[in-house]
Image (cartoon, rainbow over all chains, first blue to last red; front, side):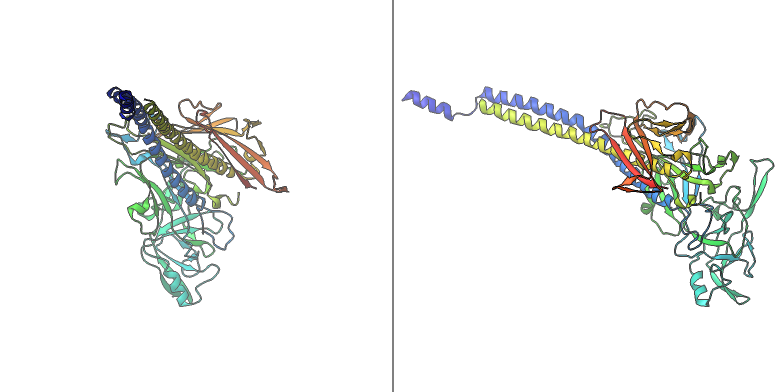
Length: 391
Length: 174
């Protein structure tokens, strides 16, 4: 009877103290090892997530640039057969000498010269191309400050209402691109007043008042060559840099067989003035009211360089594939600085970084400036489709 | 005691599985990032090949997706090196008689060099690209006369990444 009671008590009893201690010890060891494993994974996980974030930001930026650059030169000659596109992209290069460094200070801050910028020139699709003149059917020089517009192939608008509607497209501050009908020359002016209408010799025309172009001299060649149709003296007259350097494509005078286009360029640049610790890639669309957030394409961009390949001939033998200095463009070995007509493809090289952190838990340091951030680079090539259509 | 051992065993298996899951997730993230880069690089090469005119020898039919092919002095392969630590983007493209390497450094400097040999990609993320250009390709048993199909394959050289990162993309052009 007593033996049975003892057996029942044994069956009903819980763990002994030794068993409990043993269980706790084993649990602690296993849990400790597992948590240690998680702790080791955590920085790697964060690193991967941060890099993935940078990668996504770069890809988004690149995708937008691909869309814009591929369409450079769009709407120039709507409904008109034209043999050549004079300007589709304008690149502003900041060349850093070999061994140089665009960064300065501690911690290192990125200066404006660390980055190139690119303007994509497209005509406003809502504003039809027009023919420029001096109002009397003769050619007009952009060194003057007034030009008159008529519909393509016509001496004037059919009605005053049509002219008023056309004039309403032009606002003060708009950029106008003048191009020769064969694409051989171009120039640009900025409107200083909104468009208006005027009837001259029975022709109803749109009148535009604008900044005046000047002449400029290419001093890199001997003998020096002077061109007209430049905007080298007043920088605000051509904020996109189409005519701010002497080049062979510039011209001053345009006739009623040529075209005047209201352009709406898209500009990509890196802003280091708003926050020098966070260089930000921006996309600015002319004529569009954008907030800072709307302009921001990607943050923490520490490198943007734009190279272009240039047309030489139908069978290209140039081994310098991409040129990252617009002043040294060449055409079949002949100097052709700033001649953007030759651009056939654009290489965009972007370098982004993870947001620098002061967290002591973040142990990673890169090897080039010992900064607490990682780097992701991407390089893409984009063809402006309109620029190569006649090759 | 037996219950205890079983409980410990179950817990061990469970925690180990979770740790393995985390490791697998990390691998997946890394692989996806490289795949995204490979996609961009394939697209870049197709664009790059698209800029040549139809009569240009750079887009003559030839090449291979499985071996590095050279026809005359023209190579149908190249290399891209990216560095996560030095901030350097290095792109080597095949040109007539050699390679052209564009190196974009975080210092803002761009070096554009012509070399006879491809630079080594030690210590960086290195991709290898091959391309194949076919004239009058056959698609769904129909011969597409007068066009060329360009196919690019991009492979990550780092074979420790599993699954192997490789991406193929095609386009057609005149």
